[in-house]
Structures are given as structure tokens and as C-alpha cells.
Image 1 (spheres, rainbow, N blue to C red):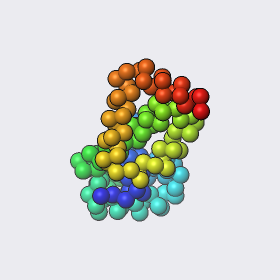
Image 2 (cartoon, rainbow, N blue to C red):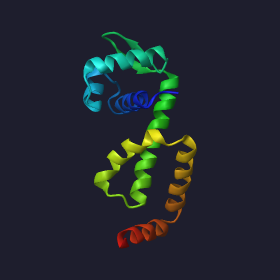
Image 3 (tube, one colour):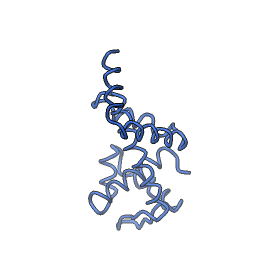
Image 4 (cartoon, rainbow, N blue to C red):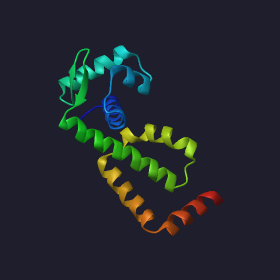
Length: 137
């Protein structure tokens, strides 16, 4: 399993490839606010662990293993954002809160949060009642 730091890189690479069609060291450095040399080291490690294929000066692409994990990580991130929005967390706090908790939850917990999100989405009145209750507190 990838470390939390590796997960951040894989998730960001996946997002960049989905949005731009490619990901470069400079793109990652900017997105993660780290030095390009740090990105190069991590990309080399991800290559060694077969999450991506990297050729110096040519860029990199995710392997099937990397794509699969990237999809799961993006799903987890989006699910947690949706969950926090449903329970009434202020929009300005959601991204940072997700970044703070996403690596500390088991996939079992993520699945249960997914069940809860689906429960609230299946009947919008439930979500509204919850938001009303949160506003009263």
C-alpha cells in the first residue's frame, strides 16, 4: 500500500492527467507546493513501486495499478467532500478538512460513509433536516 505522501502524489497525477491529458514534474510541484526535486524523487519511487512509468526528461504515465489507486483516491476525496457538505460543514473548511482526515480512515470507514451519503441522497429531506439541526446548534 502506498504511504499517505505517495497517495497525495498519485491522486494529483491522476487529476492532472484527467484534466490536462498529461502531468509533468513542474505541474506536480505547483499543485502540491513542493520543490521539483522533491517531485522527481517521489516520481522515481512511484516508478520503482510500479505505480507509474517514468522516463527522465520525458515525463510519466500511471500504470494500471496507479490508475486504479488514483481512481479510488479521487473517489475517497470526493466522497468525503460530499459527506462534509451534507453534514453542514462550512464550504470554506471542507477541502482542508478532507486533506486532514482522508489518510486516517480505513476503507471500511470510507464504505460506511458512502452508505451514509447514499442514505441522505436518497431522500433530500433527510439532508435538509440534518442541516437544520446543525444550524440550531
